Length: 336
Ligand code: NAD
Ligand code: WQD
Image (cartoon, rainbow, N blue to C red; front, side, top):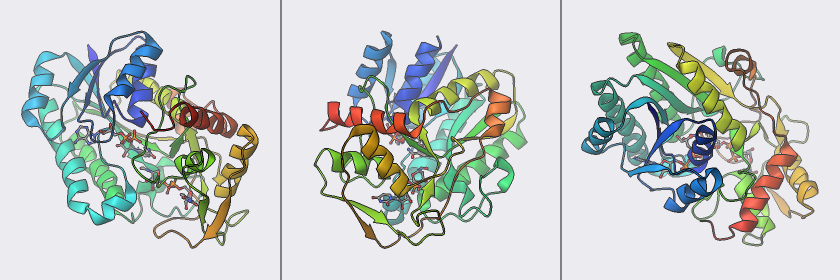
């Protein structure tokens, strides 16, 4: 039996495929390559010495999905495929709801018609909205989200919960990621954003390599230790290993479970800038700008449920994340 990884050519997906193959799992990857290069899967093959079975298919393509499930013996789907740019989603809400929600509904329907009822879903800490208490536990309750991207995650969690409630043959694990950064140690795979990055770490690495002049720090008047926003940055390889642990867990017929995947450590924008500078010996010029709309002051996880129930915890620290992000950027200045 195989694991289907949708969005497996993307940033988190490609790292997860490496860890699944290293753990001896059989993997099939589906991706429409909208935000990925086929090169990432070649690199996965180079890292693991294994061949990756790949379907260039869209999750909204019902026939493509049906053919895949008819051809492959899939036991569990790890569902990464989706659009993820927060700012873009505000301008293109229809595209986000169509891709993420119609796509997932189509996938779920094809799965159940082929008797595949195990899903591990990529959710996000964004579903908590502006947290009342930190660190955030899974039972904190979902909050008000500030953009269509976040609402797709919020709604898909609800949809998967309702699907499970109606048919208890399903096993659903909702993984709420905090802020994934870093890259595989080899420097062969990593985050490959299109255009000017929205997220902090790829922005920093592009300043470091000279593509961008300086970092804009969005606000220094938050109620945090240095006034800049605090987040829970997690190494993408730790996140990938979390999925291998979730695969082991779903085999126990878990029903519906939710896990935070984070480090539990809050790091400010300036902490990350300084950590990057000392890990890599490069100065990152920055200017303080206005707050970015929709940002919260502080967001970090309580990841003790994942430790208790999945036997998972993050191993890499901020220095590792800074070194590995920079290695990927240096080895791939123009991306893949
Ligand atoms: P990514 O864009 O690198 O990967 C997503 C992949 O899905 C891409 O390869 C893209 O080509 C593919 N895809 C998109 N729409 C598709 C469709 N309709 N059919 C088939 N393939 C499609 O993003 P990522 O950072 O690896 O994120 C993976 C998942 O994790 C996403 O669902 C994202 O929302 C979620 N997530 C990401 C973060 C983050 O900060 N990176 C945080 C929380 C949750
Ligand atoms: C981190 C911090 C910014 C860029 C986003 C999504 C979230 C999830 C992860 C998918 C904040 C500051 C950033 C810059 C800055 N994705 N910043 N200058 O906003 O925590 O989370 O990615 O689910 O849904 O919202 O991550 O990396 O954009 O920002 O000062 O140029 O860095 O204000 O405090 P965020 P981020």
